Length: 368
Ligand code: DHB
Image 1 (tube, rainbow, N blue to C red):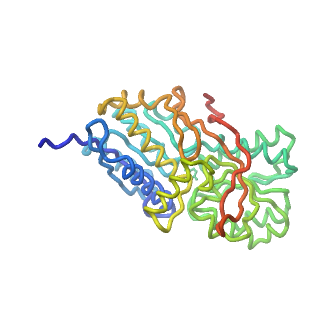
Image 2: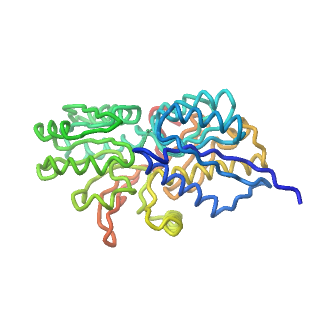
Image 3: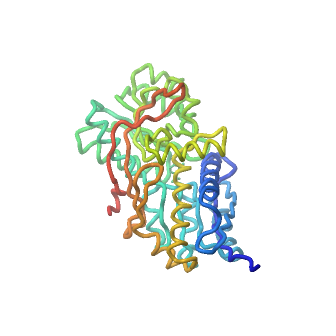
């Protein structure tokens, strides 16, 4: 018998280094999707090629180049951090290879190439509802503390604009480095100023260290509330943070506790395949990114022309484990619900329990 034609999907992730949890989550979710749907679509056999970029932009770019030239991949997927997505965007444009951004979340990423689509989120999208919730719930004086690069600066700006417009006061804007952050000196300044709340953005995986130092400085006892987009109470690490995070309110597009049949099925299957893991928002970005690739190949009837695959993904709507989503045809970015959540114990485990929904929120910078 003839061997079936193979369609390769490149998946570039930080599998080692400080952002390895992002790689581990996305790889597990992408493999789960393929295991559930089968490796054949429109007569093509799908082959996932996973590569570790260690979170270093030069390595991401070199790997992407090899995947394009040697492996002739139909898609480049993954992109665990903003600088890694920026590094590859020119290659996607030159080679007309669709690039599915599953993790990185700076608003401007999708503007770096017409061959980029995104299944994660943007920081302005997740942050505006936090600013609204804070100003509607008695928070008046805030200090912001963000990681000093694309997504942190997006979060800081979105919070500042929205919160001060509603009459709130942002008394200091603190920024910590992406590499080897030490939060202590910044948190000491927060302890001295005693704001109503500390608004925080840190990338996935870093929240545990921030919370530990928050408690060491006595900020919880001083009554300073911790607020921010939900990256800080990431499901990958939330359960190990302890009771100090009970009651922390964040806004985000995904919680493992999202009460829908689609999410219950996703979480159950993810845990069955990965016994010591709980899926986080990175996992759902990877799962939905694979869905986009699969549905695009189906729509092109197995064709792998990059422009045709891009057209196939534009405007796609489906029900994700996170809720209903749309890939906007104009912006190629994702419109989705943003949930307000509070950390609670459910069956003995810590979860972000959703209690309010902002429906169908586009990236506010680019709109629909
Ligand atoms: C980015 C990385 C993260 O881990 C995250 O939670 C949000 C954004 C980024 O680099 O874009």
